[in-house]
Structure formats: structure tokens, C-alpha cells
Image (cartoon, rainbow, N blue to C red; front, top):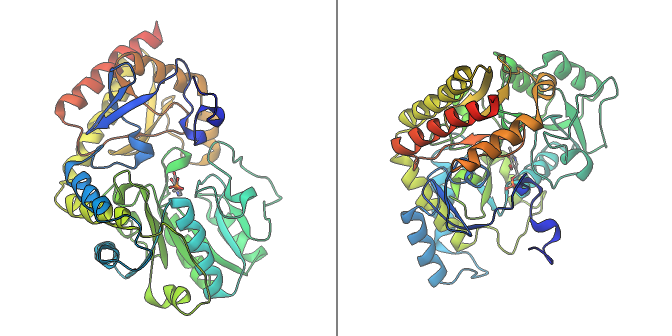
Length: 408
Ligand code: PLP
């Protein structure tokens, strides 16, 4: 079917096992394929549509922005308003720079940190995925590819890797390389299968970074605004110098941002750090952010997370009823399913637990029953505010039938 589109997809994460699937449209919690079949969607644009697909208020705001012209080249009204709306939900991180993708935002945050500290190396979690831009070799260390490393710490002079949930490794890194500009961390290592930080780990990371003059960057492209109407880092008691957000803030429109303290973001104003971008902060993106944040403000996050916890429980119960033990990691609105009764507590355990055949079979069984799941081991099940009780019940039913089919 695809001749000209390289590999038939535009991003590696879109590859699906089994029969081809082409999506025709999406609304609320649903996707429809080319043949008109409806699915409950738990991939949600890789977590990018926390309000659900094509939310009417966001769509209306975007339509207005398109009619008024999507690319004015000069400053426009919605830009400051969208920045102010983000800043109002980001504690001391009151300065905002827009980009078009989470990868660009992480790239820009690294650049700001380097300019502020005068240092070149940025540390990131070996298992973490922080986008595909900065310093290709190590920045590309996506969750599925990154392997736990031995004594030789991967370091290309610009990016150096760190072991997640390992305080001794943090100390070792700064002893080896006192000249780190910043440490990037996801408050929950979502792309490695929603691995939670062990108690005290993030605080230690922040304290150690500070002690050595490095900045802390919370990469919240995935988690930001998914667990509450703000940053997960603040929810977990952290005080990052910079944060990156994306996905949830735009409801599917391409937009992301770097948030930072005024003294840190000053580097972008006084020329120490450069930025550009034809589409950065465009009216469509800003309209999407404004409409999304105002809708999210009205949502009941605790009830949302509780509904999701119900689905997590349903996954475990469905497999238990079929005589198989599975476990989950994460939170109600975003979690990963693991074969085996013990959820992994670190990346090495996650790699050991990952079973591509299990995940592909689960994907296939659920797809047959009208529910779409991400198909790879570190994938997440996402829920949106648009998933109602009936969708949750239908998902639980499909899970029960799939677990039985997989056991048979
Ligand atoms: N950082 C994190 C934590 C992500 O989950 C992602 C994307 O999945 C990115 C950065 C990159 O964002 P984007 O795909 O918008 O470039």
C-alpha cells in the first residue's frame, strides 16, 4: 500500500505487528480505521491527547486560529497568553519558550543549561527517552535500545549516561565528571515502562546536581499535565530549574515548550543561547495550548486517576482469571503491563521482564476485540478524560477475553 512513504510510517514508534492498520479519523476515546471499524484507543497519540481526540473546544479554537492566519512571522496575541497560561501552572518556572516538538524542547533546554553554566556535558538516564535530537548517539538512546552499561560509562563529550534509581551512580558520575551542565530526568521513567523513582532517589539527584553546580531539567513531555494540571516534578516535591512539556498541552497539535526560572531563561534573552524556528509558537499551537489548559483546569484529575487504577486492576484480574500472572507499573492514566507477578523496579529488571512476543500477542488479541494498545514491551496504556465508564467496561471485557484467548 505504501510506495513513497519510507517504511510506511513517519516515526518508528508507529510500527504495528500483524495486519496493516490505517486510521481514517479519531474522536474522543475512539479511532476508526479505513474500513470503518471503531476502536477504543489507549495509545492516544503516544499520550498526546489527554482530553481525548478532537476535543470540541480545542478544535474550535484551532479553527479560529487557522482562519485568522496560521503564520504571521511576527509576535501575535495568543503567544503571550499561552505562555502565561503555562507559567500559571508551573510554580517558579515562569518563563516560557515554545517549540514544535518535545525533542526540540529538550534540545533547547540543554542549550540553555550549557549557556548558563558554561559547561558542555548533559547527563541523562541511560534508559530514558528524551527525544531524538540532541547529540544523536546518546540522545537517541531510546528505552528499547539503551542497555544497562558496565564500567565504561557512555559519554560523547556532550551527553553522558546515568543509571536510573542508582544513587551511587549519581555520586560516581559527578566524581568522574564534575563539569556537568545539567541532569535531565523524567520524574517517572515513562518511556522505559513507567518505572517509578525509588523513595529519595529524585531528591538525591537534585541535591547532588545542585551541589556540583549543575541544573536539573525535568523532562515532562510525557508526564506533564497527565497526573494533574501542572508538572509531575512539583507533585513529587522537586524543584527543577527547567522543565520541558509537550503532548498533553496541545491535545494533538504539534507544540511543546521549555519552562524555566527567569534567571535561567535570561540566557535566551541576552543572546547567550540561540533559538529560532519558523513554526515555534505559531497561532495554531498557542490556540491549542490555551484551549487545552482551560479545559484541563475544569477536569477532575483524582477521579480520572482512580478510573485508570480500575483499569490497571482489571488487567491483573483478567490474566489471573486466565491462570497467568501479570503486573503493572505507572499511574492510572498511564501505565505499562508486564508479564510476571513482580513489576520491574529498575531498567535492568524491565529489560529482563520485557517480552515482545507477549506484548505483540496482547496487542493482537485486543485489536481483534476493538481496543488498540501500543504494541511493544515498554509501551503504555493511556487513558483520556474522554474514556467514559462504558469504554472502561468494554476495555475490561476485552482484556478478560484476550487473557483467556492468550492462555488457550
Ligand atoms: N521526552 C519524553 C519524555 C518523551 O516521552 C518524548 C516523546 O515521546 C520526547 C521527549 C520527544 O517528544 P517528541 O516526540 O514530541 O519530539
